[in-house]
Image (cartoon, rainbow, N blue to C red; front, side, top):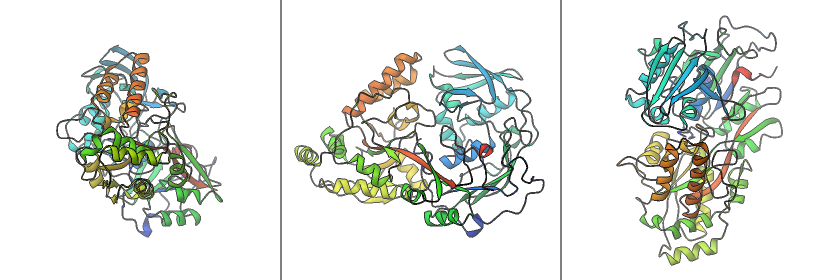
Length: 510
């Protein structure tokens, strides 16, 4: 499941209309034991806000970008991505391939969970078995793990992970497998936390706030920030006011138009979102979308340069007719952007007998403006489009199972895996699940890339996928969006390569 992962709550990236009250941004009383400002550490908490916070404290059940933001502070995976997007050690210090289905990991020694338990190979095995247990709440995270089938303990500091089939991106997938303290598995899921990260949870109010305090025994200690708070402020106007009054030190998930208005007095950091904004065209809802001429007409109707300027306030780039941005394996610089040509679009619709179509667009509140701009482009070629705003749970069903609308505005995240395999909606789907791309050749190439262990051959397969999707106008390509972070001029929010905030390396305004 993918959506944008930063701009919103993503499955993904989707905004949730969570309920916030004034207490969401009111200062927290000093946590007992919190240190004062020494060596740059601030006594008051560093407060960051977004439209919503994680749906669960359990990283195996957290569905969204804000879930990933929380997880990055409290939990650690075996491997991670470094600043250049390359795989790097985390809780595993080394690894080696035993065969095409087995990787052996050497674990970091001396690591403790927040509750005092020791991180070791048994803990890894317990986390893998729990994730693969079939528990519905873990379905999304389990799907991200591909064909991972189990773990074997070699000794306390050595563990082997096994897949059912060869998986060329298993290590990438493991970046999303956060290690949770097995001691809390039997407690109420989602409301307690114990990881190995630089912060532990001090307090949690679902849908409103999470209070964090530094964990001094962490293997990656927080030097500058001793306490932090993540708050949900769903309304962009209220969030902007909280920034201007100093109630919060930084924010993410702001609509681009709002962020653009803050450049006069705040630091605005745009970072690549690792995704592509698209319209999925669901042939099960409108069979005329199975006609390539209709799909191409929808692409020709969009002025991508104007869309980036007006829909994203300049925080994005025009895609050259493919999902992957430069820097990701399989990006093909030889492809050309589909031009803006509304007259040709009208001609193609007439040729296909598809004039006067009604193609409603489903999306979520955060993407309302962008979807409405897109609907305006379609109106100019004679297509009627109503934008249907859905809440998160409804949109999940629309995206992953069955849509009632022929068009879906979303962002095809691949930042999670830093690989096209993350866009699983466009691959083969189980019986009964709607297809976002019905082209059999593309789906075959997707399956081949998922099995190819030779890096050079795999890259060529991904390029072939990109050309096929481009030539068949398989989706409406809109933009390569950027995620925007805003913080006070004297504060500093450090971001990892995924665009998630690293509170342990950030600094509060003093």
